[in-house]
Length: 422
Ligand SMILES: Cc1ncc(COP(=O)(O)O)c(C=O)c1O
Image (cartoon, rainbow, N blue to C red; front, side, top):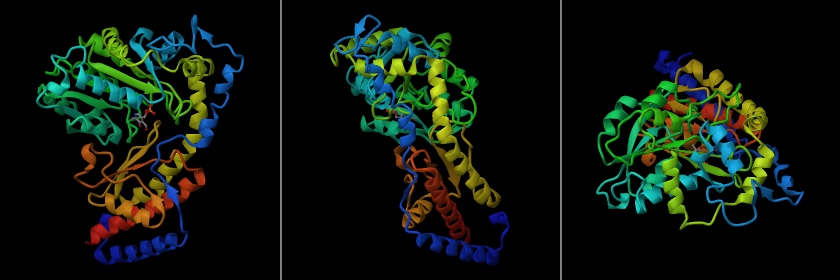
């Protein structure tokens, strides 16, 4: 039954029926939450042996005492592990503490105060700063650049990556200083950029000599459906395209070990890494190497890390299956929304009938289901069509995801019917 095929009377009858479903849900006095893109407790527990890797009292690794100062770029064996994960070279990696987001912020802050390696002047001294923001995207990315007063330029993102015709046009403007990308299992759609798109991004010729491609590979090994697909080394692609300093890549173990106590990295050309380390000497004497030591003893190498990720996948997949099956069963036949079934990452992104996203969030809230605010996936927090919502099913237990999806689907129908009858 496609809603668009129904006449007014049939739509009104359907509205009356869906309203009844909705009122029945109100009676359940729910308190559910689909906003939190974080690992559930059972996922955190998968790494509970990690702190015990220090029980032998041996803190030596790579000839270094992990408890002491030093090793600004992080423990060599841990840099090697991240290099294996990102398919780059260990010397292209600097390790950070628990949040890759902090490394991203810090890079932009360094660009602002000191400039990047190829900057003519610090970004703070530029008249205008603009940043490309593929959408739907990650609100925290957009907000980092917004907090430095930059103008956010929306660029549509699809299954094939950012609209590259538009990107190539926009980067001719020297005030365009960079672009945010989540190339694998993008937040929120779960798209994986195809190799051709990665190559095209690597080969672009920005007018700004210090253009920063913020390549956030947060979900590089986070498949939950099937085996991990290999992903290209973006630093190598940029080098091959004659743009060695274009890309700054980020990753972390936030969703591998502990979201609140993992390790992170920035990876870039050796020249960029040397430049960043030069600035970092004024900032710290070294990162938390005891945490790095625990991580390398626990995760060991890429194969072992991928085996660990399979355990996460076993917890995540049933939740994503449940979300997608609910949408396929309840919403698909009505043709009032579209979505992409992700194979990894932490989110499902759904495009509703234009003008109904805010209404769906409000309807859900009224019956006890918290959804991420409409517009959050757009630069500046404004979705001009009011159409996109992000579903985050990882944190609540399966039973709660089921209940929350029942509510969500009912609200999507209700909002669509109201719109069609308006
Ligand atoms: C795309 C993306 N990047 C970064 C992060 C946060 O990473 P971290 O915990 O390493 O700061 C998230 C968290 O949801 C994310 O979705």
